[in-house]
Length: 310
Image 1: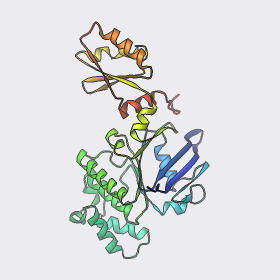
Image 2: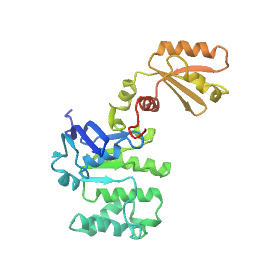
Image 3: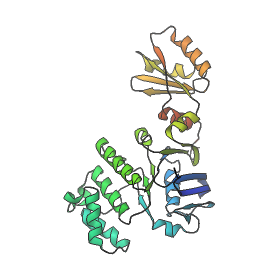
Image 4: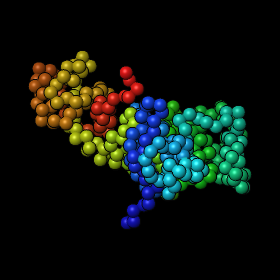
């Protein structure tokens, strides 16, 4: 089976704002038709990275291409060939859905705007609301309108910056079904998200913390890269014991998962022995479980420092 060509291929990408090094030596490869998830805490450099890849920002240094174009010298051309959906709804509240799409089509200098807008309305189920003011739409419908605007000029690459923040679970699910449909049609998608269930819908992931890409690969590869051993602790009175459990030898991570706790560490033998000894005088039970993607990300976060602190 032929390997899909690279749509994004960059290395050593850096960006500073004043004395803040926001993106540090970013290296990233994304292939055609792939859904690549970008994860990381607020202020980690996700949005800056996306803006450099779509031509809105020029890197300070590095090398590489996006859609076959040089990210340092051809950012203006890249910008016209990608679809970029921002975190905040950026269309016009006092225009209708169809007026918004027609305005975007005019900005791109499209011919046959009427038929282009009609296809976009039909493609994302917006036809029945075409005359509704954008400002009166719910979060899910605004999201759908923003995606339609991104797709008007038929981009080969979509860059989506936390596109489902603030929308309900059904709208999120419907949105991801659409993303997978676009991926199957050969469109490449780079999407940032905070949701673990969305991360697991991506073909591959990258975790960035405070400017540095810490891990990348499939969800399974990212979890495996942390070499964690995880136990689930259940029983009554767990919350009163959390701090004591954190002091156990080999306990790198203690986190609440519903009515249970997950305790993880890289030294599985040491952690298991400490847990068994600790739990001997309690009614709590311990069960070995596979480490989750969330376990892996929290573990990576603990080893990173926010450069804007202190």
